[in-house]
Image (cartoon, rainbow, N blue to C red; front, side, top):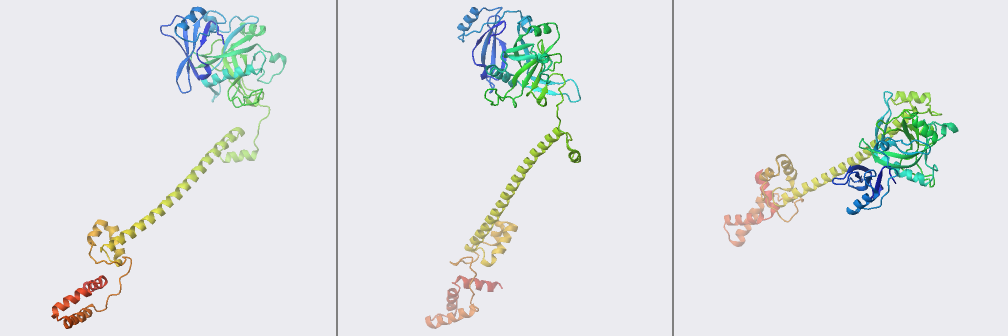
Length: 450
């Protein structure tokens, strides 16, 4: 769109960016400046080149763009006024006059009264969204020639008389500009009525207050779909600005969600009208809230109940998570116990198989392992201290002969008689044959120890 006092050459679509910064070009001609766009990811690029119409003609501007291989489509300045006229808007307030007026700016602002003053915060993204949605407002012809500029929030206060609802101006278009606070401002091109121009020129009003529809209430008038962004629905002349530091005329704002007073939030110092209907809590409910230490105002109680519900939902999730974790821990313990039992059985079976212990010594060996450690236990129960056979270590030893000596003597006598061996040789051979059986040998050794 054309700008007062400046020629513009757009290089990239402003919708690609969420923030803008203005700067001069080193080595460039006097009066030339650049608008940098900053994307959501933080990357910057040249969005537009501007030329002061008082210092550069359209031809000079185009030649510079061509020399520097930039886009040369130029929007010529609408007027060539002095710098004071441009920044001291409104200017040329006469019948049918037009002027650019700062409507609202980004930042956090507080009211000037009460122990807990109202706080309003508008981000740079909010300012950008206002410019985008206003283009749609104009395309959908919400207001004919543009959103109305009224007097003292009369329409927002519910006044519907012709006297109260007449317009001082119409907002024909808007644009986003950097401001001196380092943020962004929304400027509007106001087309003034004769009366509006006269009253502003006479100093009856010192500020402009924007009227906005918040994102959660804003919908298209042609499709009904949510717009999900702020919508500039109008403005008003006022003497009670809320936002400090605005360009003249200074701006305060009114957030108007709809025609219903209950949904209005005022940014100016004008007191908001009391809702026609209020929700009163019953006495038993008030007593119950007081006993529970909860707020007794309906809105505050609802907010606190919603907060408690949210906290309760978090507790339920944590409880379920804890129960699941406890079950998993118990399962791990059970599996660990099973593995320990298997390891115990394997270790004892191995000790029996290599003659370290007898089957009857399994528990004794395990207890020594647990008390002194496996290394010391193995020193006490040395490998091969007992003969082993093919029988499983889990089997109990067979019953040994009740009289091994008698068996040996009987066999020795037979050897002497049959093979002619002397008594000593026959006894030694008989002993070797009898004790060749591992079970008999174990029983013989046990008897000897006793």
